[in-house]
Length: 328
Image (cartoon, rainbow, N blue to C red; front, side):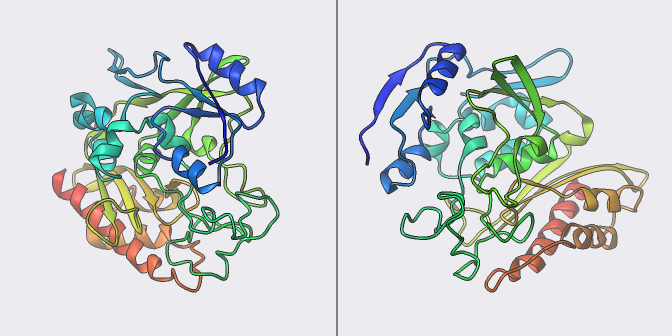
């Protein structure tokens, strides 16, 4: 590991100033991703800024029905919060499906939002990776790409986004609130993440010196009937091959509203809006669910080793929707 300067800060503005004073400086809270990357030589910051003293760990549902989750709230605390479990069960389920109990006790929701891909080529300094070294090439394109993305890819990057939590947030219309030079601004999750296109090294739309301060979720009866399904090679402590966050509102047997988001198959947490549009106004039955799944995967671009994800994702979408419909 490269030597680095460690410093602590006590408020948001001090954290922002520290970020701006040293190019390439990194924030650390739980450290469950950053430390691994530093040990591997993938991340080599000269300054590491500890933000654990910042007052950003609250979880509160206000009278208007807005849930505010501070960026330093631990994953296990959010998953176990009664308000989260009741109003947004898909979020609680997604968090509990991720990592291990020990990691969930350390990891923060802000860090989860910013976690980097688990692509083996990204994490190997000897491999070519456009995310790690811009314009160096991508060994995953012609390499062993079983775990890689089939949606949102480009000829420069096919790495999947690893988070479970963020798939649930995509289905929940989450807003990410960040603090910057002009004060706070809120971003929809779609606007927070950047597709790789020809600049895969730019993973989010955060500006220099900006800091995530909280996540905001609006309560809705739709979200109370939601479910997270994760398919993986083993039953625990494993990243998704395919995951689905689904929510349905059903009136007189007809889908009146829907949310579907996918994980394990895309370069960002993937909101399947074409699938939602296909569902709304349709009977809540398996045939309509299958049509929605086809719509969600219409733009898939499989590679040599991950073509199985297309059919696996279709089946996962149908299964998740049937689960939610049965509960409704």
